[in-house]
Image 1 (cartoon, rainbow, N blue to C red):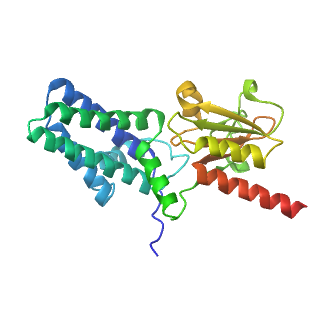
Image 2: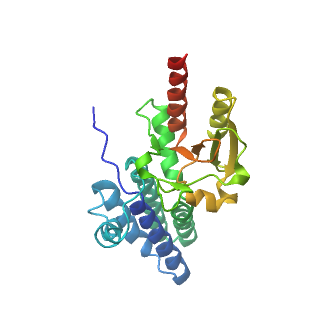
Image 3: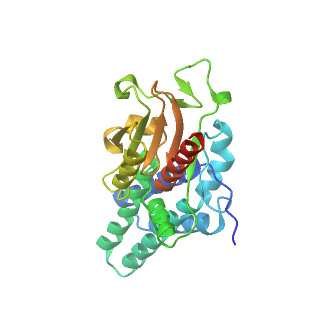
Length: 264
């Protein structure tokens, strides 16, 4: 059985996506279609051989990352690699279209990649990553789970409103009961089911559904990169755990159920 790959700094793929989006849009505006195959190669190098071979990922790791604070979280590298592979397929088809003289089709395919890359870089919602998670779930493979739990030694005593880098839930969103903030998008097919599961299994808690597009500031504060991303907080608004993905929420609910049974 293959071992689980080491987690990566998620800011690397986000940087790669931002550069890709800017380059493709610039190529479209200037009519330089060769930018499409060039960045197709850039993507495939990183996806197939890892960050050391991807030019943008290598630049981030060598130049940008050392100047930043350590990441607050790490992520499984498989979803972003799968997303990059999808990008390579689209850019490859775009290149073929340009060579065949179908420039309109070529730019359409390239700009689809640019739009998805820009969305991932700015909002953290990675469509290709969600496709990977869905495929893994359908084939019954290993679950892709990201759960970050607050610890007392991560409390910022200079800023008591923050714990471990996560801001407390604002008073306007609190209900006086334990709270689940569910960040979703209109494209998230599993989000309604997740909300239903939380409401069913935690009937005494409050559940608040937030559309990422309408709450960009909050989504940024809680580093929402997948839908659903769920933040669980105490009644006083202190964040307990942040979960990325439906499987992470199920895992947390299972853990809470086991604790309840043990207590009883």
